[in-house]
Image 1 (cartoon, rainbow, N blue to C red):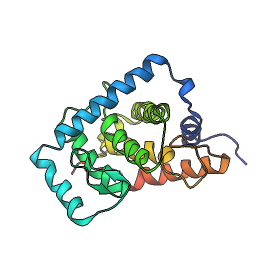
Image 2: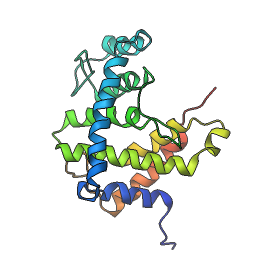
Image 3: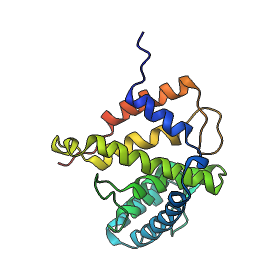
Image 4: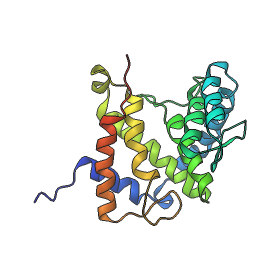
Length: 206
């Protein structure tokens, strides 16, 4: 039996074990600033006419849920709030961007984190820790994948977005809000899930 951890298992361990006490003070403060910046981008994006079809579709077909659509206040299911707010987040092209390895971590993470935080109460440090995890993992996965993944026709933003957030933000297990406590089998499940998601939810440039 091979007891060596796979890259996915190591990544899952890092995400699951991250605690706000591990995060440098300046990085924590920077993520607070980036959270406000991303909310500003969502508010601007909510006013752009090319983003309105997504909002109108969700407004007309979905109602009731724990999460709100930014600016408009409609309550919708979690995934629909993430869809609309994520569209707003990157729909004005002002959102943050990794300087060397591509990708838009704020647009990919903040709508997910805030939607989940509306479903269950979380503290400020817990929310920022989830954001730090998303930014850190997105950067490291980007360094491993780019530029080769884009040469093969994959959109790097979509690939990293899929692998980063299924680990940390969804769970069947007992947990403290957002920052989940997994046992060994749970971590294995997340690493397997990430590998599946990576292949099936890839974004392509056509």
